[in-house]
Image 1 (spheres, each protein chain N blue to C red):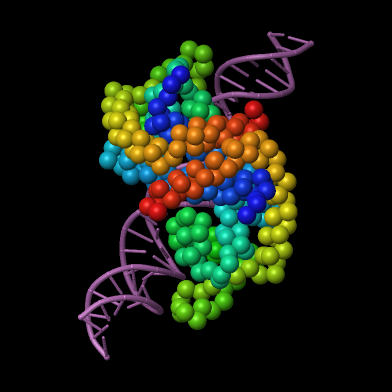
Image 2: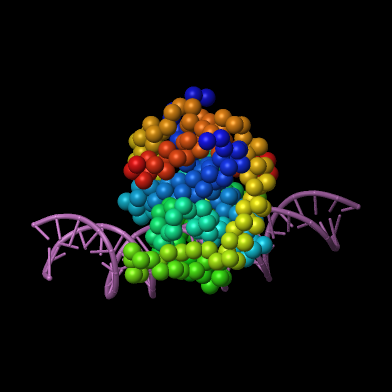
Length: 147
Length: 147
DNA sequence: AGGAACATGACAACATATTGTCAATATGTT
DNA sequence: AACATATTGACAATATGTTGTCATGTTCCT
């Protein structure tokens, strides 16, 4: 069966939708123990792993979502005492978001829980598939964001 | 920088989330002209391209989503006169979902609109990336659904 | 300085997706 | 036939995500 590039591309798109939903469910299950969800975990991770202090808008750009969706998740994390705001000398309203002690503890526990999960998942693919898929995903997110 | 398979896997996961959101936005833009969204388009496509008549539950399994989410989309498509139900001799309640004439017209118009879009997207990747990424995505959806 | 353009947080409306539950219907076993 | 089990559609609650809008704050240009 000789398929054109656009046919394969379309199939990839549909498969990405499917896998994305599955990964969300996986993340929800892993994070449930800590009262978190995939969505909140993603935001927590973006803050924890950033090299600089981030504002809500910057977190949104990091995870590739709207400012507004991210704001809601940050508010939920604050309510759960996982993060707090600190003042930003560069901007009166756009405060920095930082993890609390508790937030850091939860993030690291999740990190350690996620490692073997990721190792198992990685075993489902060959090394070539891992590397090439990552390369392709980066190209796609770049392509659709115009970079 | 020598990265472990689990690190790459984790990065792929985060990138899949990002790309999935972008593709949703792309689909929304393409489908808007026909009063559709990515989500409804996906359901329409599953029905249009199926080799057999499908019930709502079967559509849900095809697109990899919950029965309930799919039911809502099907109801919306029915309200928009894109699909209709026909009786299923095998099951009193689980009717078959089929495209209306109008639904078929819209699906084909979208198909033709999507083709050049997919061709452009495919050009962002190498042939190897296309093939390997598709293979990897299939493996992942299989892995997480236990097949 | 002043004013235009842009970025940000806040709030709201809506679409989408998951989970949970219930009753109706099939299916499979004895 | 009768019962247990699973599937299905229907309905509801909740979380997540997008878009739109507004007021505030920042930046850039002249």
